[in-house]
Length: 137
Image 1 (cartoon, one colour):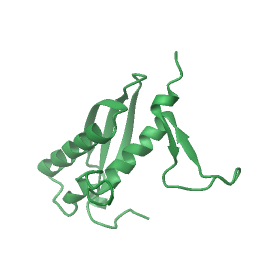
Image 2 (cartoon, rainbow, N blue to C red; image 1 turned 90 degrees about the vertical axis):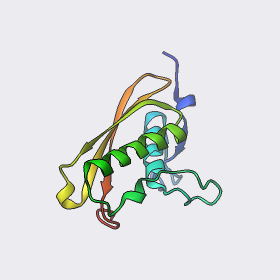
Image 3 (tube, rainbow, N blue to C red; image 1 turned 45 degrees about the horizontal axis):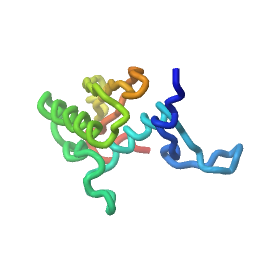
Image 4 (cartoon, helix red, strand yellow; image 1 turned 30 degrees about the horizontal axis):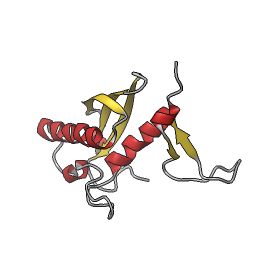
């Protein structure tokens, strides 16, 4: 099998930090780079990046919404749309909602996707906090 790390990319880890062993910025590559990219896309509000105002997602528009089926479906659709637009290394994105944490003010979105170049299935559980500031230490 060919080495796909060149296509899958290499970037700074998120959040940025210095590797104490080397004194250099921590780097990630391949599928971990994709996972962190997904997190960055979803955590960035549209309009937040001055030079790329369309980057990010609109999931933050639903903070304070009642966690009903309609809101959950809208957030899931926003996740799929944002990842389709900003993460070309993945395909076949599906999102399911886990409501088990709703009493604590959060929904868990199970994001399943396939890495385009390797055909490897992956998943990421993304916590969505229903109220600003909750769970964001």
